[in-house]
Length: 261
Image (cartoon, rainbow, N blue to C red):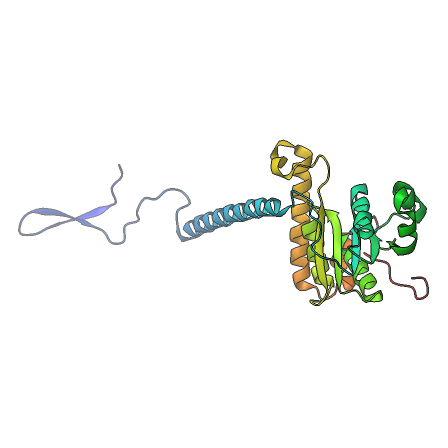
């Protein structure tokens, strides 16, 4: 073991050792204030990253816990019903709610340009008359943000203050975020989640496609939550346009043209 250089001195008793104040101490390579600071920064970064992962995983588990396991009939009636496209079961459930008198009109938003009213009537033959009189089709919405914009336009056109929203259970949290952002506090939303056949939210970890779907929807939910904290109006959202599902996307909902509503 290496001892630091010393000087010898005597006193009344005999020889004593005195450490030299200016003698350098032996330290490992890279030692020094800068190295210690970097170590602290790395440790803090690791702790922050760990906490971030814990928060992300905890948030995901909470998100999964909020996904509806069973379909529920809306409590009471609403002025209108809105169905977001993305699954045939959504449309069928929305038409059933309309037929049962849970709303006066139905908006199907985000309809593909190749899907006609006749095609919807063909898939629901017992409700042809209802579809002809009381169902509106929206071809403008490009994504969930566009769905919310079109719902707002439709509600205000018909002077509706309450609306039942029909979409898949895993999609409902993000839909409610977008609708809450687009609508006023006086306009009330009643969720009607559709439980897709074969999708088991309680056993998602045993089903890779279900796990991927929930993870993807959770990340989109987080993005929507953050985005809506900083936006004043979704119709002027540049971020929303960039997140559109079509390539290229120039708008999330086409502007209204007077006289063609």
